[in-house]
Image 1: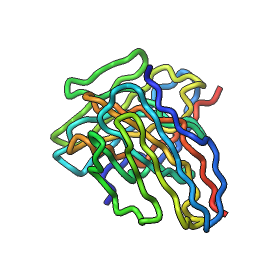
Image 2 (image 1 turned 30 degrees about the vertical axis):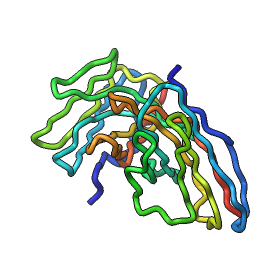
Image 3 (image 1 turned 90 degrees about the vertical axis):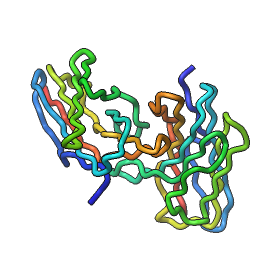
Image 4 (image 1 turned 45 degrees about the vertical axis):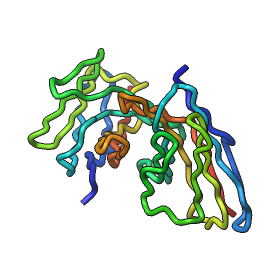
Length: 111
Length: 109
């Protein structure tokens, strides 16, 4: 099973809402990632968890809050987002080889 | 200067053509190198890892030049289905995976 599952696939939220994106992998990978991708741009790294601990935060605004409840799950909690935060949010995981497997992404629209 | 840079594209080539993409990276401590392809509105998918000795997978050949901090991808006998964006990915400090700016390929009949 080389699958990373993200839910929901699409999300529309208001600027005062609180929502969460979820990511799950069962490959025993030790590192999990959140990326943000705007149209016609490459994915931009947001956060990395290694062995369930936050190892990299690329100066992401605090309205994005990551959480890693266990080695298979990664969440991204969203609060008070802005319209410019609308993007495709991608989750990925890596094992010993550092080859990353990506989920299908959550397409987020902030209205 | 971006950490990982690629030819901007787009590359428009006929079926059967050979096309080459380049990628340069700025951090000499980079450890692992990959090429991913991304179709429109889909997630990136691993195409191949890149090794110092160079490696080939069917019509695809990847090369790494550590001295020049340069990676390349060669696609031979292009197919319509090769149309996609090709992303160079560089890893250092093990956990940090950085994407290049991407190169769009369009193969026409």
